[in-house]
Image (cartoon, rainbow, N blue to C red; front, side, top):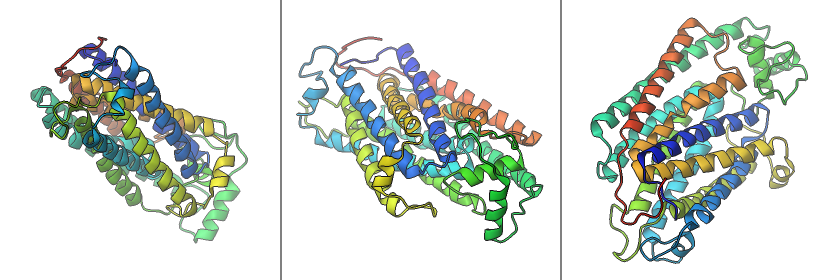
Length: 410
C-alpha cells in the first residue's frame, strides 16, 4: 500500500485535487447548457467516478508487500471491518446526494456562486468536525481563521449573486422579448430570437449573441435542459444549501472509516486504508446515483422532460465529457483523501477552494459576469481573494498524522 507521509506530498495532492474538483462541475454545466438531460449526464459521470476509485484501489492500494498490520486492498476486503465499511458507505450516500442536488443548483444560481456558497458551508461544517476527529493535529490558531475566511467568502458570494441577478434583469428589460408577457408568448418570443448555432462552441457564442448580452441570456435559456426564466432563484439557493450540508458530512464519515476514532473495530483488526475506504464510499455513491437518476428519468425534477433507460443508452451527445467529468471527480476525491490521511482531513478541506477554478471556467466557458456592473466585478474580485487567502491558510495548518507502520514515502 502506498502512503503519502510528508507535508509537501500532502499539499501536492491537495493542489491537484483542487484543480480536478474545480473542473468537473464545469463539464457537467457545459452539457446542461447544451441541452443534455442532467439524468443522462449524472449516470455517465457516476460510472467513471466509481471506476476511478477502482483504479486507486488496484494500483496504489496494492502497491508494496501486504502484512497483518498493513494490509493491501484485496486483503482488507475479507477482514471483519464492517463498522468502518458502513461509515465509508454512509459518506458515499451523502456525497452522491449532495453532488446530485448541486447539478440542479448550478443552473439556477450559476456555477461560480453555487460553488462559493456550497464550499464555504462544507468547510465550516466538515473542517470543524474533522479537527476534533483528528485529535487536533492541525494548528487551531491557523485553521479557524481560514474557516472564517471561507465564511466571509460565502457571505460575499450571496451578495455577488444578488448583484449579478440585478444586472441580468436590466439586460433582459432591454430585450425585444418582454418577460412580463404570458408564458406562451414568452416561449414564442424566445424561440424567434434564436437561430441555429454551433453547439460545439464552448462559449456558447453565436453570430448574433455576444456573452453578457440579453440576447445571449435568452439564447442560453432556449437551449439549456433546465429552464430557469420565471422561476425563483430561491429554488437554487435552497438546493445549494441542502447540497452543501450533505457534502459536508462525507469527509467526517470517511475520516471515521479510516481512523476509527470511535473504536468500533476489534483491537486486532487494522483500520481501513484510504484506498479501501474510498472504494466502499464509491460503491454506495454509485448505487445511490443510479437508483435516484433512473427514478428521475421517469419522474424528473423541476418539470424536465421525461426519459427512459433506452433513451439514455442511445444518448451519445456529450457522453465523452460526462465520462471525463466522472474521472476528474473520482481522482480529485482520491487525492483529497490521500492528502487528508497524511496531513489531517481538516487541512484537506482546502480543496474546497475549488470555486477559484470553477469561476475561471464559468467566465471562460459560459460567459458568466460578462458585461456586468462595476459593483459586481468588485465584489467578485474580493470574494475570490478571500477564497485564495482561505486556501493558503488551511494548507498552512497542515499537521502530521502518526502512522503505526510506514510503507512508502512521497
